[in-house]
Length: 473
Ligand code: FAD
Image (tube, rainbow, N blue to C red):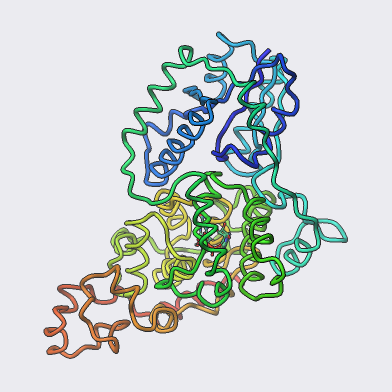
């Protein structure tokens, strides 16, 4: 019989739990088939996120070919796709890295049942996090809701080591069935043809190169630099963790190896804490499976958010008249990534300054972010909207102008992304509306013409936001 390894958001050939298990369990006479299933919904709804993902898949296909272990494509809903496979292949066992939350979990739970009903051995592995959803528990039982005690406990646990993959054995076991998968291959090529290829690094090699760069220097200043969007001071691992081009175990263990002896250093501590936030939000989503659509805090489920197409459009396009917010949204629209400080600022702006539903923002991010991860994104949005389990308090509303003054003091980031403001003097870069007529003329930025007036008054909206929450508290 054939053992199948089904790849999904784990597009790599190293430190891969399901692949390691399949190889370990295989005898010399077994064969291994590497599979990717293309979901039909993709063909209709191909967003920038998918664009980036398919480019990563492309890099992965190349890596597989280089090693001589080809990846094969199925097409259709999972049951349909595997039904097709069963027509030509005697499948004995299927290995994959199990999704603990969201759409992935629903898909996996169904397909496990489906396979078991057909007598196929299913091996779902836990792989996507340093500590999975049910590993970090309170001493008295139950799960954490607040990050800092969670993190204390997280630090206490032994960290899993990267999984070694025996590539030589893999090469001996893998079979090539190219001719049986022509339809799937065509679908794959069709989708790859749609990719625009403008999002930067993809795949395992780029992930390792960037991590190496980060560990050679930037990590030691991470605790300070990570707040300044004009500085290239973060690891940019999120896209690689999302597509699985690198595993979180590898990231963690490389951090520990490379920085050996300097563990108390603040930059490293802060970085490790960020990796733990990723685990934390996965755990939260596991225990709040409705959080994609419902406020985690019950009493906030009836908040009456604004509905205003025009304001929402201004936010999406980066035309709100608040320079930092606009620069951030344009960075997202152009590059598929946004700095963490800015994600907090724009999410706060949408929910507290425009009083608009966080779900709208969450969904927009889900289309645009190359690193879109439902657990972290929902976690981040409910944090900003003050509706999560460990959120920013509703009475501490970010001021979009002072955020700019603090975190982009010279306006370097703003000028990079909002070219209309590039000649505005530093003094006015966060409030271009304060320029005199002649200043506006001189800097070729007439507010209201070249660059929008602020779409709302922050002070007024701040008050309204606080009142809206107070009513429910
Ligand atoms: P670094 O600063 O180098 O951090 C290292 C890694 O730690 C990241 O790659 C990420 O895996 C993890 N991490 C860091 N901060 C967080 C955090 N707050 N929550 C969870 N994990 C974190 N991150 C995503 O990966 N996908 C998302 O869809 C996403 N949506 C977000 C939405 C909002 C509203 C907010 C406020 C944050 C969101 N984040 C999301 C978290 C964070 O902004 C990104 O992980 C980070 O900006 C990615 O850049 P980096 O890899 O250079 O991060």
